Image 1: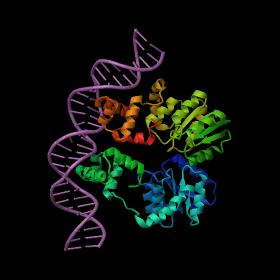
Image 2 (image 1 turned 135 degrees about the vertical axis):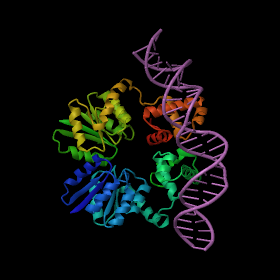
Image 3 (image 1 turned 135 degrees about the horizontal axis):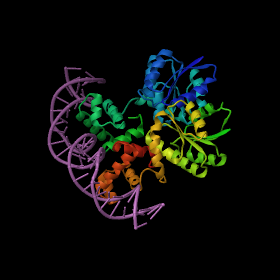
Image 4 (image 1 turned 90 degrees about the vertical axis):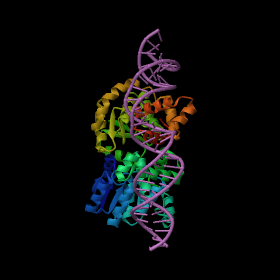
Length: 210
Length: 210
DNA sequence: TGTAATATACCCAGTAGTGGGTATTTTGGG
DNA sequence: CCCAAAATACCCACTACTGGGTATATTACA
């Protein structure tokens, strides 16, 4: 019996996956969640063999949730289920410990195939995504977490991308507004960008990569 | 027998809906599409009683597809199926002729309820969205325009998306800076957005289709 | 011709952000 | 222990943008 947990922010999509798996006698769904934090709690309690994980979720994104699950329960198989087909998203989920990646624009049945594969210890990646895997193996030896931006800068850029003002960011981080503004200036200099608009575009276009 | 077509850019989500409806003997799915143009073609040929329509689709968005379907086949019932719960999205779909609106974070079974309602000639809106409907009745008289935004507003939004300042935009258009700033304020009001960041995100996400 | 929407332009009183710095403290690695 | 990078904080002088308006001219449609 393969036990499965599902993390996906839209209930309608969760229900679709449930319907898919309902008739698989060897698979049982032990829990579902619409945010990363709740999913993590379910996984801790139920310890499913497989977790189907959206990348973008409230409270804790799929990448960090994957990392934490693999840390706590290393045998858990993680399948990313996402709309993103960019190399960076695939890499980040892979680097975090996922061994499967299903795109939302694939047939839903791909999830079933992915469950079978990862359960056997194999990887599963939708067709064209496999091209990213070899690179990822390479990239891993190089700069797994290298970025031009420092930790604080990345944190602040994410908040900028969420349309927080410098004042709001300062409150969230318990620092001075001038600290935040210094960080933004530093990022603009490092990245060769001019102003909030270009910072925002940079963040949006790179999603999780900065 | 209720005939249904589905337009949604993720095949996995389409498959979930198919699974939901597969056991409803009085409902048959006559076609599915992952872009608005293909959906329109299917609707022309098969003339389903109900169309389930995502808003964001390639080639032709759900709002315009809804408009065109209602123009050609006025009796067709349209149900929006979307992640957006903003008033504007609900209004625009309603104004285009949709009589149902299901959120992706509702249970998938809401789709079935929506199909039953709209087929009877009733409206169907997820709980909290109903508050938007009364306003929409007003807006109905307005809707010939493809967009909420006027011609000048769209032009200015494109320039904002290219990171031009209001001063630069004024120079480019041979108008006063205050004219540009009035337009930005008008756009923010119409779209329910707060500030340059949200305007920029709106423009980037729509790739100038607004 | 009348009306409503659009476009234009401005005002006042703010907040947000930027350029170009100086300076001190903390942190992490060699 | 030393050093470089990161983090923090501030200063001055500005530009950019926003909220909340008022007002007139132009355009398009009934």
